[in-house]
Image (tube, rainbow, N blue to C red; front, side):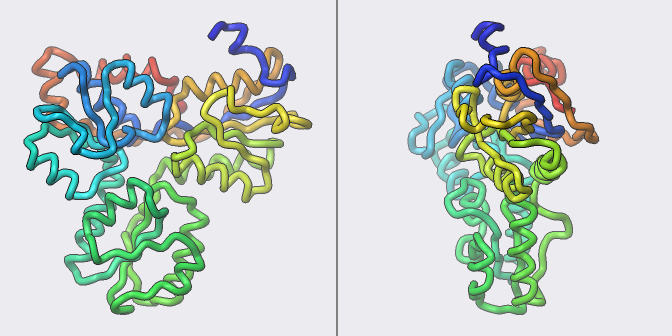
Length: 345
């Protein structure tokens, strides 16, 4: 795409753009993307990844061009291959199948998702039945439920919370998917706490820090814009929640993966646009969509916010192999991330 194409507005108009901060890649996504990149550098293609490494087609296609093969089932991975588990986590049965086949594995599960798995195991060991607040079919939910099969009931809505039955109301715990709406969880949890006064939960909220921060930023910008565009994939839970949060704040909101998806009718009468991005959307996509919305003469302002300082370490075996190959992991991370996005602070 040429510079002229990038600067052209979707509808020929210039407008003001307010860019949310924080936005885009979170620490768990950064770690997962780095793991796949370093595996390619260390071991060469093909590299197999179970499920999309993160929910973003831009990221997935970039890796496919470099020899990454994404599969939905471990059975699709050839013998003697390397398979990486995605950031969303897996049930133990998947890990067991990979081990039984002698596959080499690297776990890119987000540490915050792993935390939920550990909490689930602990509650079941202590005799609790778990009510998991989340969305049916989401990969993360399937992974969590797979750790404690038979001991967890999924609750998706306030209506389900009002009627859910459990074996013993005195021994019940709750956990949440990490990418939910803060407000939605609060409503569901209020019902569960009313119905089950003895319910227990983690001492710290399971909703990811990045999910919360991005939702707070959307609420903060909603009063200053005429519409909000969320850069993210349709199968990205946290991106969809950002759209819902914006709409709940009274602002039209749209989920887009590229400038090509922006409809001109969405921009009719719109002078000021807010832009944010889900936790798996690279900054390169954000900047292209900002250019499309702003046009040649429109203004751009970035919200003030405290920087996100969270970082998760790479798997020990990846760091070890990088160092033994004479590579500096920290330098590789810096160079690699500059190709994907400009850190949003």
